[in-house]
Length: 508
Image 1 (cartoon, rainbow, N blue to C red):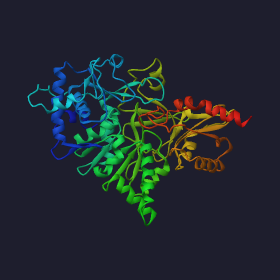
Image 2: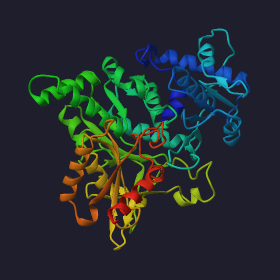
Image 3: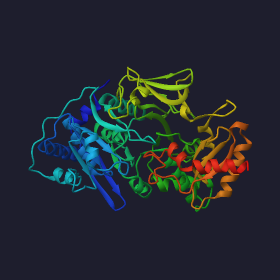
Image 4: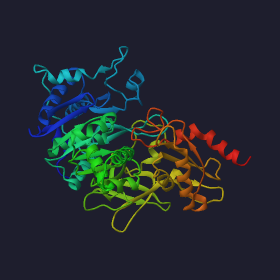
């Protein structure tokens, strides 16, 4: 591997020509990457003065902000492990500090009864000119962790996963080779910085010399056009919403429909987009096609918290339906049941640090090989295809197996359906729980779309009944993860009675 990205970021001040911006609904803050580096050094000195030492852990429970980035970079300099907690999923209390052995917790909602620190103090530290002096930059080996990831599972306490510097370095290096981010680029990120991959693009800016803009999900649509980024990182649900927004705006523009959609897309994303990046969940093929036809090429990839980025489509190497070609240092193993496992030259970790007994053994092999639980295959040209989750294969009473992901993708192609999850509560008929795209739901359009799908489906793959969710799936009602994936088990628990009642009523 070439020089460690993380070691370079920690030890070398960036050039003066590139900036980081923080965009909110109420304004924008901007500074050079060199100033960011210098201010992070001052924060590192303050952490040392508070007794923080190499190997300690600090927690960050806050929305995206300059202070979040400063803390993360300061911790990297000191070889202090960060634990980024997603707001809303975690609470800043003594149990959190005890469970994860945190030396300090920084939060934007401090509790006076706890030892948490208000994160806005970090800004003051970074602006002080006469504070303590930071120690020399730390240097990492590939197998040392720099942060704790937390899984976004649908049930139970999130599992903690120490992420090795080698896994971070190899991913960022491979992405740079594929996409060649350079001086003219500005990467727009808006998902929580508690998700490690969002921080990759800040490290990339510091290492390779390009701009980066940090926002929030709530502000993304309102700020994209004025931010004028060249690259936007987003989960499929974000791009599905963007597509609906563009389609709605295009109807108000006279002239050729295709030209109207392109104009509406430029209005939303700005006029400098080089490409769009998506992953973390299955993308709707129609949405991918839509953006490509709008002259906004979008590239899907694949990875998990436990594997980091595994594969990616990229310019000149993209295939419809696939999740891309493998990154260097990754190997895919498909067992006799079609379940995909991933072996990495630089594993993220060999086990969970915080999990229930047996959790690590079910996922990690002795050498760090990860059993993903996804069904897939590789084609002859080295492209990876993911068909769905092994756990989401439904076995009917007649013994036949149904993979639900393709059915769910077909359901979501309706403008009236935002999200769909398919179940078989009695092992006899398929029932879909759909989150409508509008409130109130367009029930007639949903029914018409399901009927159309059923006419083109094999008998065992037809939807017997549809349950329309009482509330659209969201993070706030705990039916979507932080990456906007449906929480299948939670949705099943919430609507099981409705599904069973529908089937009982049909036989009454």
